[in-house]
Image 1 (cartoon, rainbow over the protein chains, first blue to last red):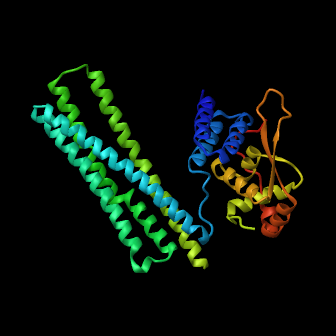
Image 2 (image 1 turned 135 degrees about the vertical axis):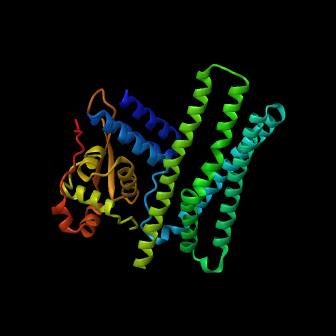
Image 3 (image 1 turned 90 degrees about the vertical axis):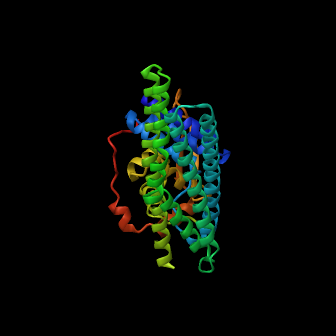
Length: 232
Length: 102
């Protein structure tokens, strides 16, 4: 069961990988038969899948890689921010619609809180983008290595500390309040209410390690970049 | 020849240098070096791209999927000997994670 889960994860990653990496993905997959311990096989598969999703990227080891990495990270951020803007827009549009159709004050407060939370996330995305662009075009940061450093610093900060926790604080109360108010106004089986709430909370709790992990990842890249600079 | 000289790459090269003529499987290298699949395979790919490593599918085991095998090319062998300090070779001890290869 555990082993099968691992091979399924790896198979998905192989299907999604570029053609140049599929053979390497298959090589990792076929090695799983040689691993006797199921948990070790799962770890092997998850590590391999994560690496395939990242396009087999290795930590930076030479400053000549900086321009290419800068471009790649900028593209990734642009894509992620695009998805973020879209999600915020959909949440705001959906809850604006609820705001019109629900007449109960509790539900409406929940809608307003959710819209405000999504709005704050959109504002954060916008100001993070602006901050990054301003710093990147500053005279002191003309070299790619400096620009890369600025981008990494901003992304590290975006995923932890004040930026992250203010985002979480803004996002959480609205949907919870809304769900509670809807449940009070239109009593439904407790089960579906709890499933919704627990699902949302699990999603919110998962966001914490994922964001902190991303922040650490940017910090590690910064540390490696600083090491390389010292050696120059 | 442009290849990352990270400590992990040196570990992999050192592992190949221990028995240079022998074909090795990915999981065995992972156990010997302690590197996880997500770190090891990108390194193997880079080495193969730089023609420092030759690869081959082992189809000898009937009823089992073919396994990918790796061995240093003559260029790779020379490169590894230049790069890997002899102290690292003698220091290298196999690392086991409690799982065994069949």
